[in-house]
Length: 106
Image (spheres, one colour):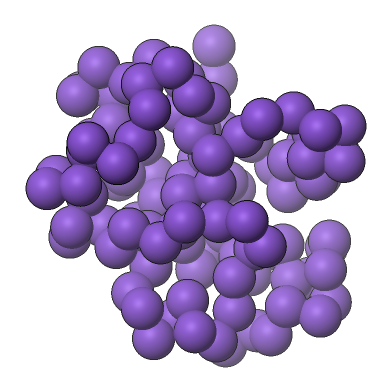
């Protein structure tokens, strides 16, 4: 099973109504600028102390600005025993360019 998802795949799954937990691992000031609707903010540095907020049974898609921090988050969550986590390739930058031009780029 791959641990990545493209913005197109994510959008299609969201449109279909799939239950996906969107985990934004950026910082609060970044989240204030731009976010994917319905996402939850847990900055990468706070992830180890915030595991109780996550459901191990959920499909979790992590994203950040361009995909580097969220890749770290996915690796960490896999090590913690979360079986169904994916990294959004290209992060919110790709989401803004390819899916929703209303999401500001920074």
